[in-house]
Length: 303
Image (cartoon, rainbow, N blue to C red; front, side):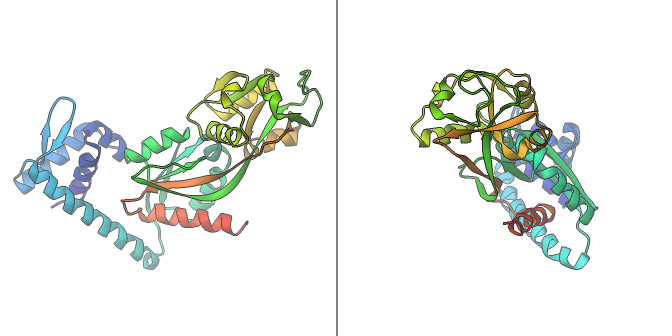
Protein backbone atom coordinates (compact mmCIF):
# COMPACT_ATOMS: atom_id res chain seq x y z
CA UNK A 1 0.00 0.00 0.00
CA UNK A 2 1.37 3.41 -1.01
CA UNK A 3 1.57 5.76 2.00
CA UNK A 4 1.05 8.87 -0.16
CA UNK A 5 -2.15 7.33 -1.52
CA UNK A 6 -3.25 6.55 2.03
CA UNK A 7 -2.59 10.14 3.08
CA UNK A 8 -4.69 11.47 0.19
CA UNK A 9 -7.47 9.02 1.07
CA UNK A 10 -7.45 10.15 4.71
CA UNK A 11 -7.66 13.82 3.72
CA UNK A 12 -10.50 13.12 1.28
CA UNK A 13 -12.40 11.08 3.86
CA UNK A 14 -12.01 13.89 6.38
CA UNK A 15 -13.03 16.68 4.00
CA UNK A 16 -15.72 14.63 2.19
CA UNK A 17 -14.88 16.60 -0.91
CA UNK A 18 -12.18 15.99 -3.56
CA UNK A 19 -11.95 19.69 -4.45
CA UNK A 20 -11.33 20.76 -0.85
CA UNK A 21 -8.82 17.92 -0.47
CA UNK A 22 -6.92 19.10 -3.54
CA UNK A 23 -6.67 22.61 -2.07
CA UNK A 24 -5.55 21.32 1.32
CA UNK A 25 -2.84 19.11 -0.18
CA UNK A 26 -1.82 21.62 -2.89
CA UNK A 27 -2.64 19.11 -5.63
CA UNK A 28 -4.92 19.13 -8.64
CA UNK A 29 -8.34 17.51 -8.28
CA UNK A 30 -7.64 14.96 -11.05
CA UNK A 31 -4.47 13.90 -9.20
CA UNK A 32 -6.49 13.35 -6.01
CA UNK A 33 -9.05 11.25 -7.91
CA UNK A 34 -6.30 9.27 -9.62
CA UNK A 35 -4.51 8.42 -6.37
CA UNK A 36 -7.78 7.34 -4.73
CA UNK A 37 -8.49 5.12 -7.73
CA UNK A 38 -4.99 3.59 -7.54
CA UNK A 39 -5.51 2.83 -3.84
CA UNK A 40 -8.87 1.20 -4.59
CA UNK A 41 -7.24 -0.89 -7.34
CA UNK A 42 -4.48 -1.98 -4.97
CA UNK A 43 -6.91 -3.03 -2.22
CA UNK A 44 -9.56 -4.39 -4.64
CA UNK A 45 -12.33 -2.51 -2.79
CA UNK A 46 -14.45 0.56 -3.39
CA UNK A 47 -13.68 3.23 -0.79
CA UNK A 48 -16.12 6.01 -1.76
CA UNK A 49 -19.62 6.37 -3.12
CA UNK A 50 -19.33 9.31 -5.51
CA UNK A 51 -21.99 11.80 -6.67
CA UNK A 52 -21.55 14.95 -8.70
CA UNK A 53 -21.22 17.06 -5.53
CA UNK A 54 -20.20 14.87 -2.62
CA UNK A 55 -18.34 11.71 -1.69
CA UNK A 56 -19.32 9.22 1.00
CA UNK A 57 -17.31 6.45 2.59
CA UNK A 58 -18.31 2.87 1.86
CA UNK A 59 -18.16 0.27 4.64
CA UNK A 60 -14.68 -0.68 3.46
CA UNK A 61 -13.79 2.99 3.43
CA UNK A 62 -14.82 3.41 7.07
CA UNK A 63 -12.62 0.48 8.06
CA UNK A 64 -9.60 1.87 6.20
CA UNK A 65 -10.24 5.37 7.61
CA UNK A 66 -9.87 4.14 11.19
CA UNK A 67 -6.57 2.46 10.39
CA UNK A 68 -5.33 5.36 8.24
CA UNK A 69 -5.78 7.81 11.11
CA UNK A 70 -3.69 5.64 13.42
CA UNK A 71 -1.02 4.98 10.78
CA UNK A 72 -0.61 8.67 9.91
CA UNK A 73 -0.38 9.68 13.58
CA UNK A 74 2.24 6.98 14.19
CA UNK A 75 4.30 8.15 11.21
CA UNK A 76 4.12 11.78 12.37
CA UNK A 77 5.16 10.78 15.90
CA UNK A 78 8.08 8.76 14.54
CA UNK A 79 9.24 11.64 12.35
CA UNK A 80 9.02 14.02 15.32
CA UNK A 81 11.24 11.82 17.48
CA UNK A 82 13.73 10.98 14.72
CA UNK A 83 14.23 14.66 13.86
CA UNK A 84 16.36 14.93 16.98
CA UNK A 85 18.85 12.52 15.40
CA UNK A 86 18.73 13.82 11.85
CA UNK A 87 19.63 17.39 12.89
CA UNK A 88 17.65 18.59 9.87
CA UNK A 89 14.03 19.64 10.07
CA UNK A 90 12.17 19.52 6.79
CA UNK A 91 8.64 19.42 5.40
CA UNK A 92 5.81 21.87 4.80
CA UNK A 93 4.48 24.28 7.39
CA UNK A 94 1.20 25.98 6.47
CA UNK A 95 0.16 28.71 8.89
CA UNK A 96 -2.99 30.78 9.05
CA UNK A 97 -2.78 34.07 10.92
CA UNK A 98 -5.31 36.76 11.67
CA UNK A 99 -4.41 40.15 10.27
CA UNK A 100 -2.64 41.81 13.20
CA UNK A 101 -0.56 38.74 14.04
CA UNK A 102 0.21 37.90 10.41
CA UNK A 103 1.28 41.42 9.48
CA UNK A 104 2.97 42.65 12.66
CA UNK A 105 4.01 39.74 14.93
CA UNK A 106 4.91 36.65 12.90
CA UNK A 107 6.98 37.98 9.95
CA UNK A 108 10.25 38.46 11.83
CA UNK A 109 9.69 35.20 13.76
CA UNK A 110 9.17 33.30 10.51
CA UNK A 111 12.39 34.81 9.18
CA UNK A 112 14.39 33.68 12.20
CA UNK A 113 12.78 30.21 12.12
CA UNK A 114 13.57 29.84 8.40
CA UNK A 115 17.21 30.71 9.00
CA UNK A 116 17.37 28.07 11.71
CA UNK A 117 15.49 25.44 9.66
CA UNK A 118 16.14 26.27 5.98
CA UNK A 119 14.67 22.98 4.69
CA UNK A 120 11.16 23.80 5.96
CA UNK A 121 8.84 25.24 3.32
CA UNK A 122 6.84 28.00 5.03
CA UNK A 123 3.50 29.29 3.79
CA UNK A 124 1.30 31.80 5.61
CA UNK A 125 -2.27 32.85 4.86
CA UNK A 126 -3.76 35.98 6.40
CA UNK A 127 -7.45 36.49 7.16
CA UNK A 128 -9.73 37.29 10.06
CA UNK A 129 -9.94 34.89 13.01
CA UNK A 130 -13.06 33.09 11.74
CA UNK A 131 -11.45 32.48 8.35
CA UNK A 132 -8.40 30.96 10.06
CA UNK A 133 -10.59 28.64 12.13
CA UNK A 134 -12.45 27.53 8.98
CA UNK A 135 -9.16 26.79 7.20
CA UNK A 136 -7.96 24.72 10.15
CA UNK A 137 -11.17 22.67 10.20
CA UNK A 138 -10.76 22.01 6.47
CA UNK A 139 -7.14 20.82 6.97
CA UNK A 140 -5.84 23.64 4.78
CA UNK A 141 -3.33 24.75 7.44
CA UNK A 142 -1.36 23.07 10.22
CA UNK A 143 -1.55 25.87 12.80
CA UNK A 144 -3.68 28.97 13.34
CA UNK A 145 -2.74 32.19 15.11
CA UNK A 146 -5.77 34.20 16.18
CA UNK A 147 -6.64 37.24 18.28
CA UNK A 148 -9.40 35.79 20.47
CA UNK A 149 -10.09 32.42 22.10
CA UNK A 150 -12.14 29.97 20.07
CA UNK A 151 -14.35 27.30 21.59
CA UNK A 152 -14.92 24.39 19.23
CA UNK A 153 -15.13 20.67 20.07
CA UNK A 154 -12.43 19.78 17.51
CA UNK A 155 -9.97 22.56 18.32
CA UNK A 156 -7.67 23.53 21.16
CA UNK A 157 -6.13 26.93 21.84
CA UNK A 158 -3.60 28.39 24.23
CA UNK A 159 -2.15 31.90 24.67
CA UNK A 160 1.35 32.84 23.61
CA UNK A 161 1.46 36.66 23.84
CA UNK A 162 -0.41 39.40 25.70
CA UNK A 163 -1.56 42.35 23.60
CA UNK A 164 -3.22 45.70 24.25
CA UNK A 165 -5.60 47.59 21.99
CA UNK A 166 -5.63 51.37 22.08
CA UNK A 167 -7.75 54.14 20.64
CA UNK A 168 -5.86 56.25 18.10
CA UNK A 169 -6.52 59.25 15.90
CA UNK A 170 -4.49 61.22 13.39
CA UNK A 171 -2.16 63.80 14.88
CA UNK A 172 -4.19 66.67 13.47
CA UNK A 173 -7.65 65.17 14.00
CA UNK A 174 -10.20 67.72 15.12
CA UNK A 175 -13.45 66.89 16.89
CA UNK A 176 -15.20 68.96 19.59
CA UNK A 177 -14.96 66.08 22.07
CA UNK A 178 -11.37 65.19 21.28
CA UNK A 179 -9.27 67.91 19.69
CA UNK A 180 -5.71 67.72 21.07
CA UNK A 181 -6.88 65.90 24.20
CA UNK A 182 -4.94 62.90 25.47
CA UNK A 183 -8.02 61.17 26.89
CA UNK A 184 -11.73 60.85 26.30
CA UNK A 185 -14.79 59.65 28.21
CA UNK A 186 -16.20 56.23 27.44
CA UNK A 187 -19.58 57.76 26.60
CA UNK A 188 -17.93 59.83 23.85
CA UNK A 189 -17.65 56.67 21.75
CA UNK A 190 -21.34 57.16 21.01
CA UNK A 191 -20.58 60.40 19.17
CA UNK A 192 -17.03 60.31 17.81
CA UNK A 193 -16.84 58.63 14.35
CA UNK A 194 -15.23 55.19 14.56
CA UNK A 195 -13.48 53.19 11.84
CA UNK A 196 -13.25 49.54 12.91
CA UNK A 197 -12.28 46.11 11.66
CA UNK A 198 -15.18 43.99 10.41
CA UNK A 199 -17.38 41.75 12.54
CA UNK A 200 -15.74 38.32 12.74
CA UNK A 201 -12.27 39.74 13.29
CA UNK A 202 -10.52 39.06 16.59
CA UNK A 203 -9.99 42.79 17.09
CA UNK A 204 -13.70 43.53 16.82
CA UNK A 205 -14.57 40.66 19.16
CA UNK A 206 -12.23 41.98 21.88
CA UNK A 207 -13.60 45.51 21.53
CA UNK A 208 -17.16 44.24 21.94
CA UNK A 209 -16.32 42.01 24.91
CA UNK A 210 -14.32 44.72 26.69
CA UNK A 211 -17.17 47.21 26.33
CA UNK A 212 -19.76 44.69 27.52
CA UNK A 213 -17.61 44.06 30.61
CA UNK A 214 -18.09 47.70 31.62
CA UNK A 215 -21.81 47.69 30.74
CA UNK A 216 -21.42 49.61 27.47
CA UNK A 217 -23.51 48.30 24.58
CA UNK A 218 -21.25 47.89 21.49
CA UNK A 219 -24.28 48.57 19.28
CA UNK A 220 -24.18 52.16 20.55
CA UNK A 221 -20.76 52.79 19.00
CA UNK A 222 -20.75 55.45 16.29
CA UNK A 223 -19.26 53.17 13.60
CA UNK A 224 -19.05 55.06 10.31
CA UNK A 225 -16.86 52.56 8.45
CA UNK A 226 -15.91 48.88 8.67
CA UNK A 227 -12.81 47.70 6.81
CA UNK A 228 -11.37 44.25 6.21
CA UNK A 229 -7.73 44.84 7.09
CA UNK A 230 -5.66 46.86 9.52
CA UNK A 231 -3.73 48.85 6.91
CA UNK A 232 -6.96 50.21 5.41
CA UNK A 233 -8.20 51.19 8.86
CA UNK A 234 -4.98 53.09 9.60
CA UNK A 235 -5.11 54.88 6.24
CA UNK A 236 -8.69 56.02 6.86
CA UNK A 237 -7.77 57.30 10.32
CA UNK A 238 -4.72 59.14 8.99
CA UNK A 239 -7.05 60.77 6.44
CA UNK A 240 -9.05 62.25 9.33
CA UNK A 241 -12.29 60.32 8.77
CA UNK A 242 -12.49 59.23 12.42
CA UNK A 243 -10.67 57.34 15.16
CA UNK A 244 -10.09 53.62 15.65
CA UNK A 245 -9.18 50.98 18.20
CA UNK A 246 -6.29 48.75 17.15
CA UNK A 247 -3.53 46.59 18.56
CA UNK A 248 -0.64 48.68 19.81
CA UNK A 249 1.72 46.33 17.97
CA UNK A 250 0.04 47.33 14.69
CA UNK A 251 0.70 51.06 15.00
CA UNK A 252 4.30 51.22 16.26
CA UNK A 253 5.59 52.68 12.98
CA UNK A 254 2.86 55.35 12.84
CA UNK A 255 3.45 56.34 16.46
CA UNK A 256 7.17 56.71 15.76
CA UNK A 257 6.48 58.81 12.65
CA UNK A 258 3.90 60.90 14.50
CA UNK A 259 1.07 60.33 12.02
CA UNK A 260 -1.10 58.71 14.73
CA UNK A 261 -1.45 59.39 18.45
CA UNK A 262 -2.97 57.37 21.28
CA UNK A 263 -6.05 58.63 23.12
CA UNK A 264 -6.83 57.03 26.46
CA UNK A 265 -10.47 55.92 26.83
CA UNK A 266 -11.41 56.37 30.48
CA UNK A 267 -13.22 53.51 32.15
CA UNK A 268 -12.20 50.63 29.87
CA UNK A 269 -9.08 48.67 28.93
CA UNK A 270 -8.84 46.61 25.78
CA UNK A 271 -6.51 43.78 26.84
CA UNK A 272 -6.26 40.39 25.19
CA UNK A 273 -4.00 37.47 24.37
CA UNK A 274 -2.93 36.13 21.02
CA UNK A 275 -3.61 32.40 20.68
CA UNK A 276 -2.20 29.39 18.86
CA UNK A 277 -5.00 27.08 17.73
CA UNK A 278 -4.74 23.51 16.42
CA UNK A 279 -6.78 20.36 15.88
CA UNK A 280 -6.93 18.52 19.22
CA UNK A 281 -7.51 15.11 17.58
CA UNK A 282 -4.59 15.13 15.16
CA UNK A 283 -0.90 14.77 15.85
CA UNK A 284 1.06 17.83 14.75
CA UNK A 285 3.60 17.48 11.99
CA UNK A 286 7.21 17.75 13.10
CA UNK A 287 7.52 21.22 11.56
CA UNK A 288 4.33 22.44 13.26
CA UNK A 289 5.40 21.01 16.61
CA UNK A 290 8.85 22.61 16.35
CA UNK A 291 7.45 25.99 15.33
CA UNK A 292 4.94 25.95 18.21
CA UNK A 293 7.76 25.17 20.63
CA UNK A 294 9.89 27.94 19.08
CA UNK A 295 7.11 30.52 19.47
CA UNK A 296 6.36 29.61 23.09
CA UNK A 297 10.03 29.66 24.11
CA UNK A 298 10.59 32.94 22.25
CA UNK A 299 7.89 34.84 24.09
CA UNK A 300 8.43 33.07 27.39
CA UNK A 301 11.99 34.42 27.39
CA UNK A 302 10.64 37.97 26.95
CA UNK A 303 8.09 37.77 29.78
